[in-house]
Image (cartoon, rainbow, N blue to C red; front, side, top):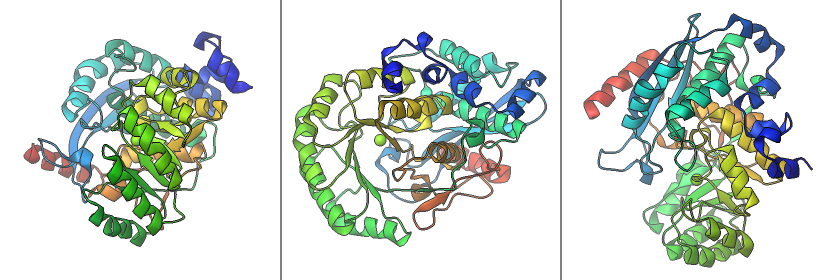
Length: 418
Ligand SMILES: [Mg+2]
């Protein structure tokens, strides 16, 4: 029983495969192909790290992108140049209404704290790089500033893939997926808006819907009833983003289950662990964790405590791809549900999630809603879902090419907006 061993042993005692839960090179050393190994002696180092703060325009209302500084999706493009001139791109995707990281904190953390300690390091040494990043910007309850660090982690993966000629899936020793089925996000202000919101998704070929619920259980049950009626066969995934208290969650969970809602994600705030235990014990429907699961250690602790039936993975929340891949393996080992979602990722961070979920054979529609909500892309061949599915990039690294002209245009637009 692999998962028993994994969950019951201290990280330093884990076997090579189990070591995935604790070591960045767990993933990489396990899967490093001979091609990458052959490149390592060249000891390519990180020469330069540049950041490009932008605000992507949005084309639909999403509650997380409303705030005092106006609407739009903030992001920081991260460009890492290696000592041989090869370039890798990543993207940090802070949303202050989702967690505490902001556009400004991502920029200052990278420029003033992370870049200075990373310049000159061997770019293949992902474990060492994450170790020094976590030393410089330390933990709170878990990994500090994970969304910011994820931008660096993704750029390094892109860079290693570009240098080695491998798509990230191949880098992990896996087959790249071809396409992913997506879920359309519904977050109406009033029930009257539901039909047209669903119609909009269906018109684009979407068959699966994820609904934003909480805090009002009456509204939520009514909303899920309507969605279920309009989309009887789709995967109807309810995400509360920590918006219920325990009593409300215990009351609403069986009602959602009766309507055929298959999972309830993040019903309570992240630190209500005894509440999660109660909800899991109630057993009305699978309880999925999201916001609170940052590092692989957190996930193992929550599983051991009986807090969840699975987790929704997103590299940004986890501090990057290494941690996210480890967490998928932990879920697989524990026989728990692995769902895939995102933070309304623009195309660069979206590419990382698409490759990750494709490589790990995600079985459920992914709530990757960047293409649904964002009105601009900075890559040359933007991701456009067709029939509710989106292609998974196949080339080296992230398999995408940045359109630097479009990026500079967005950078300039952002300056005038701020
Ligand atoms: Mg979520």
